[in-house]
Amino acid sequence: DGGLSVKQKELIALGIGVASRCEPCIYAHVEKCLKAGAMPREVMDAAGVAVMMGGGPVYTYTTVVAAALEHFAAHPVVN
Image (tube, rainbow, N blue to C red; front, side, top):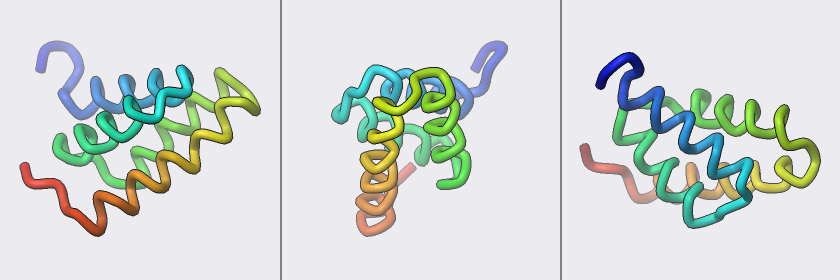
């Protein structure tokens, strides 16, 4: 873990993926966030921080985060 937990690191990585507008990154890090124990609310909060930093163009990628959460809700992540 180090100074940050794996969950915290994955939430940060997700925020970077959203800010970078990288759909494959978003799906990969949503999955890793869930595997690390993040709740969907925490995942959406991380996306929200990315939106605060990146504005409108980044906001459109929150729908990708929501779709990834729906995907993994239908296909649960195994730890």
